[in-house]
Amino acid sequence: MNTLLKDVFGVFKFAEGLYAGIRKVLVPPKAYSWQTFIYLSVFSWVVSFFAIGYIKDIIAFFGWLFLIAGTAWYTTEDPLRVPGTFMPVGAVITGFLVSVFAFGNQQDVITPRTIVFWPTISALITAIPEFIEGNDTDAKARIPKPEDRQRIIILVASSMLLSCWIQFHFLMNNWFQEYPSLQADTFKSSTVVVRTEERLKIPQNGAIILEKLQPIVVEEIAQRPWSEVERWLLLKYVKPRVGTLGRGVIQKNLGKYEEKELWRVEPRVANNKSGYILDLLSIWSGPSSNPRGYYLKKSCRIAALAATSNSDNKITVAEIECDRGSKLIAGSPPSQLGEEQGKN
Image 1: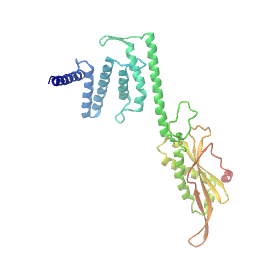
Image 2: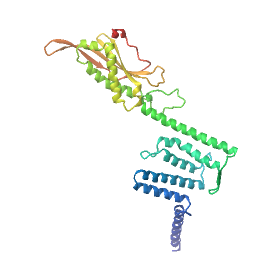
Image 3: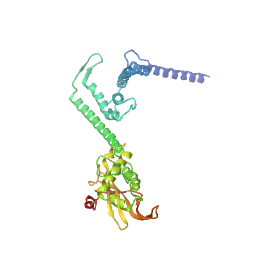
Image 4: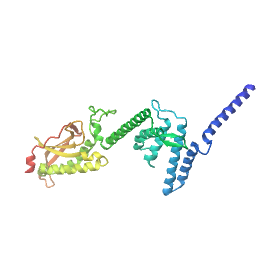
């Protein structure tokens, strides 16, 4: 029985201690305390939820200020340092809140700029107290001691360097989103970029251009009289026509990418025993590890085919057959043979 009573009293004592600890955190010992600022921030956000217009933004603005002030106060009372530095963990938390407040928005609270400026803001928050001496009621500016200046400079400079590397990360990600064809290139000679994913065998956008262009060209040529097709294949006609069709395909299928301006389409025409070979080229003019760049090629074979018209008269029409896939070729595209013929 005595053991049971001891256990019961022990539970009550534990609950009492837990309640005292929670009460100490939640109930401010005096009006001027960090808990007061936290409560003011919560109250401001609740009120701003019911407000409208610019009043809502003003109340939310003060809510952020109260939250930053309360967090900074609480985390600097008994600061825990980041290992290897004199930066308090509280400065890291406060720096994150300041960065979110300065660079976030209602749609995206955490933006790339929030993460980029976070280390630098945290370092500046850590350095500010070194330039102030005194207490809350009697403070004045001072110049840090020489040994303190050195560690402040090292901390701020290293944090700025970290911000630069984070910005470089976001920059590279943005490049790969806007210029996805770069993922098909090699980065073996780069000292700052390391490929972590499998390299694409062929630039997808370049292949899409030729895949979408092929049926349009086939429609222009197939079953047309052979004499018209031969005229169509003259350089002075085929080059501007295919170029116009290619620009339309690029604008329609690559409109959301910045790299759309770096692709162009050109034809190449050559004779063979059965007729002609029309090569459709999608040429990349953007950055490349190969100084001469690269291009993709899809070949179409055009031949004459005897057919019978409605009046039972035999006529010769064009038949066209294209490769199923595109080939990636490193280097500059070949010059057009027979250019002089096209000019005549």
